[in-house]
Image (cartoon, rainbow, N blue to C red; front, side, top):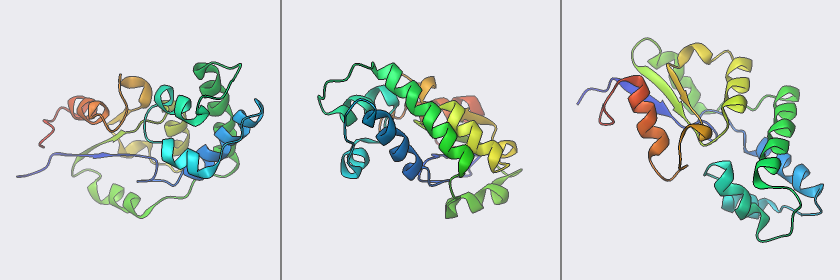
Length: 160
């Protein structure tokens, strides 16, 4: 079998953004009097925001809607990324190796704005033929929707 494309997850695969995301959610929820413990955060992440935020709230009363929490979190994490871009992880060393050899995409439950902000800061935009973000699919991981859409946008079968 020969491969024609590579699809990468983003957070925790190419860059270590989790400390930034935790801090952003912690700050936003703190404004509502809700304490977010690291273990709650790390047990709840992985899906798209509309799936993750209710898990973070754990039934706590909150005057903000899920959409409002997400918007405030995105604004906060954007500032954190601007102040200190997340570090690249070892997997990112594959990008220049695969560049020009395989079509490449990102398939992430994260938001497009955050992904593109980091890609621009790291000068990685040119590596990717497609970027699939949480807002592009009905379901986040572990559902395969993001990855199947990435393969479609790359013009390859998932097996390729």
